[in-house]
Length: 287
Image (cartoon, rainbow, N blue to C red; front, side):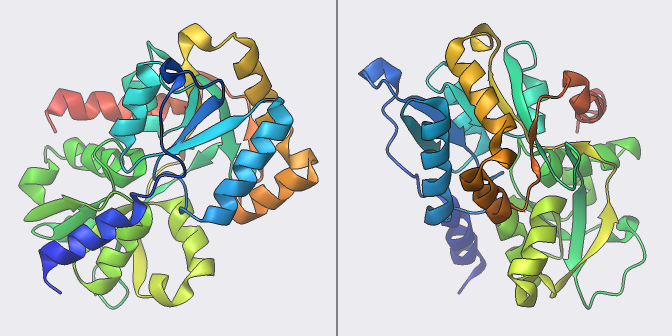
């Protein structure tokens, strides 16, 4: 299999949508909830459980909408075609004037996570500076952990991904970054630490072929967001209540176990100040 074919294969792994999107403009009365590749995987059982729980807890039908890229889901959310979405902290701070927080997942009892730079497990390397000239795998251009954190690290040292790496590409999924590094398609990669941690338990044979070279600072976990203009609506209130109370519901506990999360909480927007600072740095340096 050549490189182009493999990139197409791993990039297409997250294309499947849980249900076709038609939107409220077409007459749907269901609450539309968007999902991006921030989701750990596209497991059908998990999606069914989540849709069922939200529908029951909110007291109205819920439609899950899945897309390949962050940009696609963010565009639907900003246009009002989605009621809410589980997005990434990077697009949240990019559109902070239009988006509001609904809830933030709790991972290891905190609304925080890290970005990892990973390399093959057998690579002898002392620090990230030695990645210069690599073929580097990113997750998504709008991903905090899968792009922005590394871009900000380079910007701090007056570098950019285009200048520092020999080549970069996007896999459009954190699991796919791990696959790319494990297979040798990439020399290194930027990945969501939560996904790497969970996959190290679920798919140890794959993840053991990689190792973490660098852990970032703790940053705001990918949040659930909605338009600011809809934040005080009854439906968003129902969604907030459903998410915050999920850990106290047997059905919800099953979902949290599948996701390896502890729950959801209402958090201040300052939770994402670190991501906003990285974004400002990259903009300043032209990264």
